[in-house]
Length: 134
Image 1 (cartoon, rainbow, N blue to C red):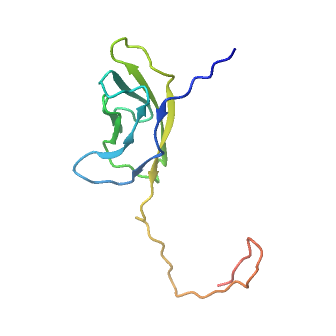
Image 2 (cartoon, one colour):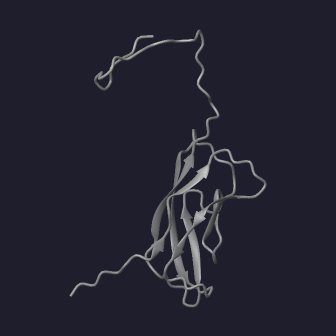
Image 3 (cartoon, one colour):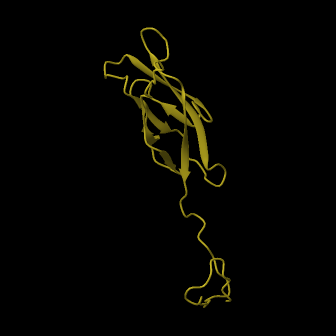
């Protein structure tokens, strides 16, 4: 007989706003396992790209924060791993899980159109990829 173990990790996709300049670290999201019953018996750990230097986790609550401002043009996402550990035994409560934090773009480089204004049109029902002349 084969037993399937249900994964207990609960999280949404994580995003961080690029070039955040607030006075507090930027809240990214929360990791949570359904094996955490709120009795402070679970410790959350973070490893991978930027763990400890760019991103930090509250080991008890699972809250993730970005410690520095990020630039999407330099790196658009970070791959990290989370682990939920039983504080009493030091053993993992479930397998380590990988997730991505995406850097959301802000429009800090607005488009410029020298020698404008421009005018163009595309006929209705034109095929995909049709080139419009300006």
